[in-house]
Amino acid sequence: MQRISGDPDIPFADILAPTSTPENPDREVSVPPPTYATQPGFRYDLSSITTGNRPLFLAVTDEAGEAASELARSSSLDPGQASAVVSCLSRSVALVQGPPGTGQSYTGVQLIRVSLANKKATGIGPILVCTHTNHALDAILERSVDDGVLGIVRIGGRSKSERLDDVNLRVLAQSLDLTKTEKAERWKLLQQTKKETEEINKILDALNSLGSETMVKAHLREHYPYRHDQIFAPNEDGWITVGRKQETILDLWLRTGSLGRWRARPFEELQEVHCSEMTVAEKRVMFKSWVSEIQDELGERLRHALSSYKEAKHNLDMIRAEVNLHVLRQASIIGITTSGLARNLDLLHGVDPKLLICEEAGEILEAQMLTTLLPSVCHVILVGDHQQLRPQVQNFELSTESHHGGQRMHPSIAQLVRTTQYPRLRDDPSVAQYPEVVGMRKRLFWMHHDQLEDDNDSSGQSTSRTNAYEVDMVAALVKHIFLQGVYKPADIAVLTPYLGQLRKLRQRFSSTHLIILNDRDAADLEKKGEEPGDGGLATAAADPNRPVKGSLNQALRLTAVPTLAIRAVLVGCVRLAAIRSARMDAATRNVQSRASRALRI
Image 1: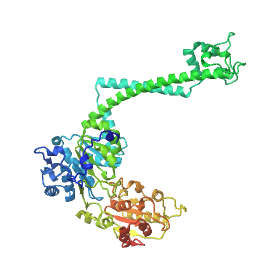
Image 2 (image 1 turned 30 degrees about the vertical axis):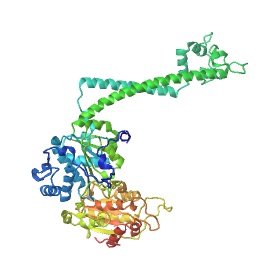
Image 3 (image 1 turned 180 degrees about the vertical axis):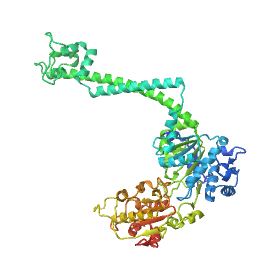
């Protein structure tokens, strides 16, 4: 933001913030194609994403509807995904949006494949892939690895994927061979920074012991040897004057002084006075002047050491930056988070990426998005769902491509979000073919009960909830599903909005089942790619006399729970009072039509 405030030359400024004119009072904008796609005779080669690498080309002047239909017939993309791909390739700024399970991330991967296949013709250099979270970045880079993409570089050390360890920028830079001159220069700078660091630590230790006898004695010996001899030298009889036990010579000198003077002499006059003839007050004046001189001397040494260290560190960083820049320029994909991009702006300026693909775009703040728009970027593709991940996109005047074909939820489960958040959601034919869940009569069931939550906090101030009845019910149901002998531990997900309930569930399952539980209130949306294969169990209970707090009171969070289920069962142990208090009127009517006090299996 500091860079932008000083130099407001932002790519796509006329699109992101159009100005109102008499000719265009509504600030309508026409999004042009990326500059490299407007070259005479240029066409995208789409064979990298077609079935059997069937030849297929796309020019930005082609009719979008016909091109999308042809792409859908020739590839694994459905019509909505094909339309999104065509639109993204034909516009310099494009948004891809759709409900959970419609394949936004899959569409993003296909766009990466097309861009890589046309890299030589477009001259775009490395593709910059940016996400809001490390988890999402790992996921999209792993999919690229699965596609056999070479030249992937991940910037940042907070990856949890072991598969990406070898493509981390730090690892790749360390493995790069340097010339003898570069190695010698780097070793020299490393030694200099080590030397200056030791000097700085030494000075800081001296400042911490400022005024000690050792410091004062060394200072007097170097600058005022006659004062040193007056205080610390042996007496004429060869003995050193010492005071009481544990008392230094300096302390004894400061504590004792000559008598008979009512007024201290000026500092200038004291320069000619023997130390033994000074009063206690005069000695303290002299002592303070020596300490001040020591402090000034140490301060000057510290400033010089810091200056030398900064210079050596800057030169060392320049060498590292050159190495990193060499690695990045050879990359095909550069993966980075929004916060990492802000920290590495200077480095990425040297790469000059032209294509930016941003996943989780709906979750990224506008200020963060502006940071990602490097001056060299001429094509930006934003992929995300602003209805599920906050903050929402604020400017909908841009062209958007929404995909509404659901490929995750069974129709009976999708109906829950279709009546609340995504009225345009359409079911892909494949989801109707999902097999029934072994051991369950119904695929979707909401259980209504009157067993109130545990009375852990009578004050009502806690946002965490527990319900022992639901813990017992969920444990029994999970055991029943496991006994069918069909499902693996990874096929069932138990979701709960509350940490208190999570702890009780973890304690109950720890001795009986190999199940991983998470606080999905914080993790379900950020890790929406972790889809349970065959089941989702959701637990939440509320006392009608206590207010619903936190994420359970947000329609977007409640929507996220059913969208994670694929083909199995969704059991909601939710009191209807809790849902009503969450202002989910449409969902309440849906639940009431399905709720029951007993689950028949």
